[in-house]
Structure formats: C-alpha cells, structure tokens
Length: 162
Image 1 (cartoon, one colour):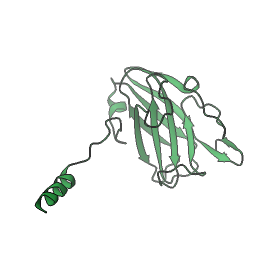
Image 2: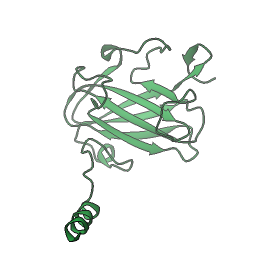
Image 3: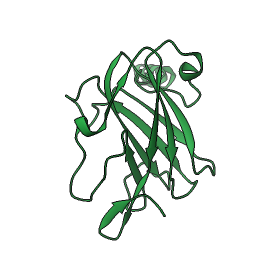
Image 4: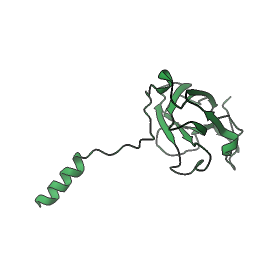
C-alpha cells in the first residue's frame, strides 16, 4: 500500500514536460530580433471568439501537414479581436510553410465554422490542400513578416469572409 501511495505521489508531483516546439503567446523573439521567427498578421477573422493556432512546418517540406510534423506552434486566445499579430520563433533558418487555424469555439476540434489560412494565401478548396511549394516562405536570422487572410466554409466553397 505504501508503495502505491509513494508512486502516486511521485506521479502527481512530477511536472509534465512541455513540448519545446510550443511557444508562448507573449514570446519576445519578434520584438528583440536576431533569431529565426515569423511575425504573422492574421486578418479576416469571422469573429473574435475562440483562439487561433499558428503552426510552422519546415525547414523544408518533408513533414508538411503531417500530424506532429510541425516545427513550432503557438495558441493565442482572441478575446474579441478580429485581427491579431502572432510571433512564432523557429528552430533554424530555412523555408517554412505557416498554417493558421481559427478554433472559433475553442473546443480543440476542427468544426465547419472554424477557419484556416496559409502563408502566401493560396486559394483553398474543400477537396484539396495547398502544397509546401505554394505556401513556403524564406525565414532568415530576423523575424519574417507575413500576412495571412483567413478562409471559411461557404456552402460548397471556401474563401475569405465578406
């Protein structure tokens, strides 16, 4: 019995290891500069509810859109904002594709009312995904500025709101 209590105490008191690829919404990298990062200006949000998740894939396209294949990500609550700038530090210089997902009800699932966007703003459809080449941007030793326009399902098509 004592061994079970000790094991339970160790399990409860041991902090979970955070994924080092995940950044804080208040990360100062884009303000300070000197390191690889993207500063993503997200426009065209349908509403200010929920949160946005910004993820970068790379350097290179080998893991593009693969589950867990992202190089960095950050979740940012919208708190009523319909446009937001998000800084995402990256591990190295190279070519990256950036994805943005608006989880409108913050349920951590992809729903029909959620939105999506990609770096370089390719045209989206319900039946295909853009390629790494269509979305990749070069990231150097200073923050790279990107503007991503969000897209939402509209009947049988996908496009910006408005």
